[in-house]
Length: 356
Image (cartoon, rainbow, N blue to C red; front, side):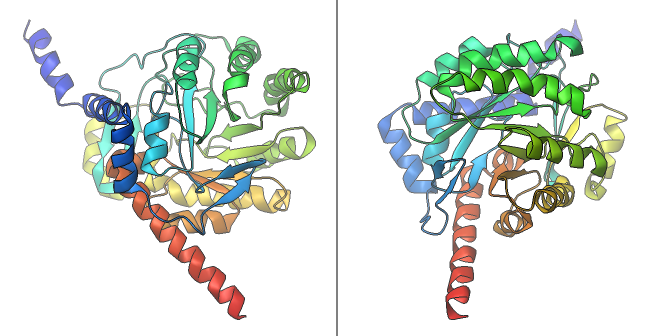
């Protein structure tokens, strides 16, 4: 009885509620033209040196929103008004899926990190399509698709195809998420044959379409260097267009300032995202870039929280970068600060090149 009475109070004090409220508030503001104008005035910054082309598309900024925040495509216009150069919606699953545990999100504020414990939250592919169809901005929209928690591993290739086909005309690019490791049922295929079984049907479907949609592979930072090389070789040997590196980590490294909090959580499963992931993510991006000799675009993701972090990722070989946890912590101010700082650093770098 007492537990049932306390549950609503616990929910109101949880990170889940805080995050849902923030999304709802942002969506309400962005529902009107005036609201989007105000977001633009508050958070946008000059992007003269940020504009670029990748995958045959123009981006106003290399800084995008990582999958995991706008899970259902409801915030595309809001994110464009906030200053993101692109938005990755998802992870989208075939059927509606809830996290399944409560609480499932924990703040590790001292390390500017988050611990996710639960399945990908998704309203399902049909709902996501309806939301994406309603957006009015010109921002680049990627669709991150993933296997449902209840889908057997052997059925994964068919499920990815069932997601890919109906979304094809609504996405600007696709990220095939094989970094499904937020719950105790980890799904991170690393074997070439297993990954190719997922990708081949997508390549075949794309060949029959009038419009070309880039296909990227999102990988886990917990892969060994040899496995990362395998993923890179797949990119080199197939029509794969690029790699997103990386998703969250099941490791617990880099959390020196959150030792007490982690002790209270015990051996809770799930992934860590945020600042502690940066060193590994940069290393993975650099390894992919060097092995592919810079011939394919890489999206760097994981631990970026400052303009210097973004620049370090770009210098390691990334063409674009994504933030997720940093946006949860810092909101639009983080986007503005990273864009402004990165723009200034690129301006100085170009001026130095011109002098030389």
